[in-house]
Length: 434
Image: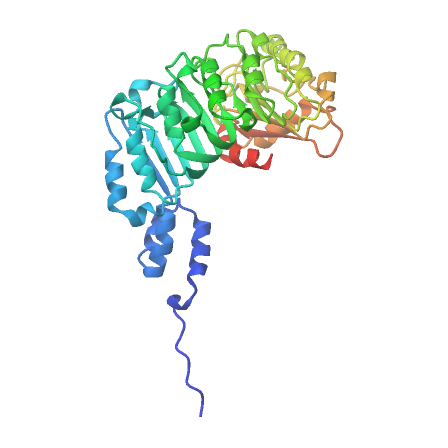
């Protein structure tokens, strides 16, 4: 007599961990697929929902509040428990920033949002105004709750007075904080450590406010200098170009491993102090990889100042050099159907240029000042745009600029597009590795 046959296996007989592993590869961006998975069975619903609501992105206009978000989270605690990344952002993101377009969030409203999200790991704030409830700071709590730990906080061009800003940031302790504030204050004396102290493992500081020395002075009061590991000097559209950047770098501390600077009206203000731990130096050169011969002299003069004024000041053991340049003099991506007739200007000009000493301002970058960076491993040229299909050509031409700079096999030249660099370069992971 044959043994009784076993019933056929169904999807419900498979371990839930297998579904979780499959959905982990989908991420939280494939909303239609994840929504369909929630309808299969209860096990799939629980797993899919964790991915479907992992990121909560909330846009608000200047006349809109975040109270409805609080009401939603209070009414749906199961969904709120799935949220790992919260992004609060102005509906009209402006550059340069426009404060009247920014929505306002009160400290007590954000505290309620934070309490409703027990699994929160990342917070992104973009052009949001931070305000104390009723315009008055909250009284200190006799027994403040323990701070929530976040992997990453991005505080990008948010506006608020110094005291409410740091009161907001004091809700958490951070593995990494990207801090890009806009302060109307002109005096940081209102800040004291204690309840406002920042607990961060690493900080990327971007003093976008018109008074960057106020940002640095305030930060030094609430966080130790060894946490400052990255510094970005904002565009001259957002800050006074006469601010002595060297003094800011000196005040921040000697733990910086990643610095991004650019030319200003007075490059002397960008002189680098001694930065012993610096590993990556980023510089907005303002020149083109390719330029018409008629513009070569001015382009080379501008690029020569970088080699004369900056490279000798960089540590000899620098690991990575990133230069932000243009593809050609017209800054644009040539249209595939465009043709150049006459001078090499306008759309399609780049395709009319022949790479060589007469068209590449960066030619000669293998000068003695470059030779001193003996341990340099990566040289990256980052451009706003590269003609379609020409990334390989751009890389090859960039390598020609530095033919004898380094002989060791570890050195490589690469070309990336700004958008791709922003997407791929995670300063949080980079600083964690450092």
